[in-house]
Image (cartoon, rainbow, N blue to C red; front, side):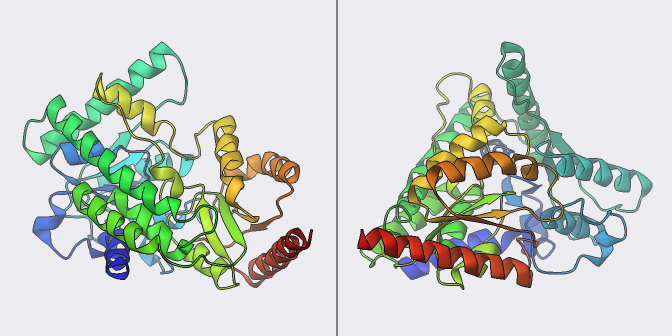
Length: 380
């Protein structure tokens, strides 16, 4: 049962974005999102289904003609390429959160390409803006932005929606989050689940219907709880958040196991539930304001890293050429890791593609160090 459940979870994570353009009826009920800073509960409560743009080791020749190199992450190049080649023509909307400069620039590019007629088949392109500021005015603004997006999506879906539908969507998502935390628990201490299996199993929360996700994640957790622990150095992936398991696969090919990642597609996406007993829009805005993205305050990011180090023997920090944010935090990463005596390596290849030979060498050296430390701890 667990292997079947994990296979279905993986399919629910990996396939949806690449299947766009094949089924007109399905596409028409879909909202394409560039990053998980957009509340999936708003999309579902409006009667639509969220699908996230994802990076891939595949060329984007059409996007290459309009986007500058090394400014946009792979996922955004894939999104623009899909928009320019007509694969998004049938979807209800594209929503980009103002979660990073590249996402905001991508929003502007898409709107301009549509205005010029270069991407004439694009659906409505919407921007979702949350302020990362703890003040009454900021909280009110964020709640209003969530309310406005909900109204826009409900209008596109052609059906009126209210607070009750939104609270129901939040409750369903919370049940799915509970199941996701059971999957993540299999990675703590002595891990029983590889990162290559874990990240898709967690990331599927964002795209699968919540009740189906909860059933699959619970089935996987029930069976895998009896699996023998994986004896290997435990690695945390940090830096620019990954949106897939390609980097995990490269690390685990060297004999390690990835037990966590600072990414909303993985361990950080389902940590806490949402209390919608009050204003559901304010609750959603407060929750998604804490999603890991380039606008998350560095203090909050360091707290996440500090907590995740409990289960890690080593850390791989991904800083690809398109990164314009997380590299600034590297001195803080290095200082925190030194205090915990946890070794780390920095890699610069595209995390959705293939690592460079230098990156692979750094990972090999890091894991040699981690194994030596583990062996020394056993001796003493």
